[in-house]
Image (tube, rainbow, N blue to C red; front, side, top):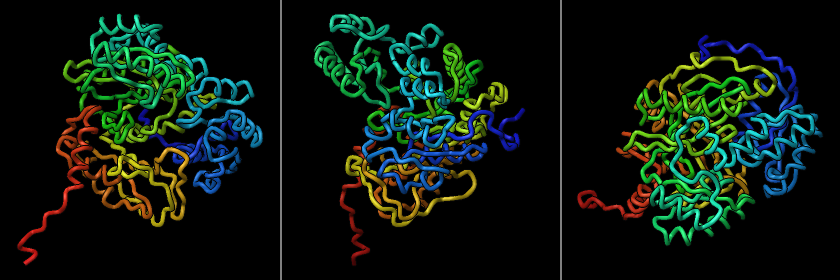
Length: 478
């Protein structure tokens, strides 16, 4: 069975007639499209700011859930469950962010007699706690970064762990995510100062002050493996490279990783499958790793129990619609393919286009979209929430669109991406598109010579170059 070439006959839902999308923006649009392709009715929740969103226009029903502030709408389980009942939803799809990795919310959905499109609540709880996830990984014989065996209970324990694994070390919030809740200590004195600060920050941000310690791999690469399971069987859909990051937030992603040999790829992906299988994983999930290129070693760091922003690059190289498959699995279908069915095809790259000014420390730039020109052509995909005249609200994440390209090789994909960025035009807003254009012109990026700390230094040099006054040509002046 060649998954990439199978014809998608019309699917008839067995249990899910209406799915409520408990999210907004481009991921809400993405889920609505997948549901419609499966013959499901799609409803979406909307705050005050999103009444006229693209998702609201596309859905069969839009249910208002409150004010523009996320805490009173998209982060409020009670109003979302009320919306699900109002539209007679059989299932709730959480997308990414907001309540997507909230085990209590998943349990409430199931207790209300609806299907949560994602893993079981207990799996979310286990893998969402970084310390417990590490312990689970170690039991599955998956390599982890040397560090504490769980949450450190005292400063004395933290000192002992740091002395054993060596400095520098990372102090990480056990309940953290998205690059938040992380501090680095380079010596014992800094550990003494940073540990209580990290604990207070973790408590304030996540309602859980637990932290654990890991060795800090200075020039690591960030590689993640996509898995898909039905609660009994699990397959991997290869890996993605996500090392181009700013303050631990991903900027550009590609698949496959240009830094792995076939042997390392096989080991990495097998370890991810083994861990997902151990917890009886259901739905789409991502296991994130640090890759120490100098040692040729990879370490599991955490699992995201939801669909990822960067899932399109995996879809491009495998030909598998991940969102549609999660809906099928939630609807009771077993996994439709085996590992041998999944074959890598070419290379794909994704740029995140945000409403931010990269030359002004990524200052948010919400506002009205005056003009919109999307690039097109073979191997080009746009996932976006925009339309001409749309007013980007200031209340949420600034992601406007994801520009994804696919081609027969990484070199060809880079050229295709450069071409599409030249064609892209979003009038009325400053965006991160110029940043991506500059990155693609960099020799180190084109040669894949980068790591998780690369972009911070590169950005300083780029800003300085952009700020330099243009030198006039004397011959032109004469």
